[in-house]
Image (cartoon, rainbow, N blue to C red):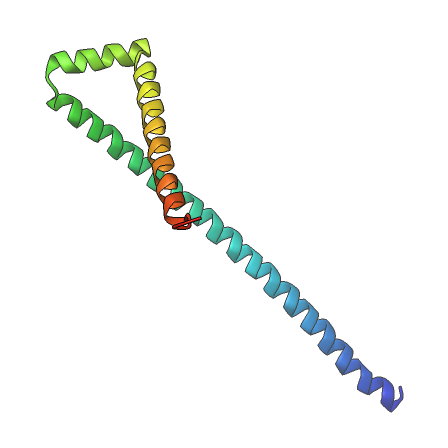
Length: 118
C-alpha cells in the first residue's frame, strides 16, 4: 500500500459516515414529522368531537327551556322539512337586501366621482 492510498481511505470513510449520518437524520426528521402530524390530527379530531358534544348539550338545554308547544312545532317542522322553504326565503331576502344596498352605494360613489360640471 502506498502513501496516497492510505491518505484516501480516511476521506472515503468520512464521506460514507457523513452520508449515513445525513440519511439517518433525514429519516429521523421524517419520523418526527409523521408523529407530530398524527398527534395534530388526533388533537383536532378530539376537539371536533368535544365541540359536537357541547353543541348537542346546548341544543338540548335550549330545547328544555322552550315551551312544549314551541318544541313540538319545531320538531314537526324539522321532520316535515318545511323549514327549508323558510330558510330559502330568508336567504333570498337577505341577498336581495344586500344587492340593493350595494347598488345604492355604487350610485353614491358614481355621483361623488362625476365631474361637477360638463
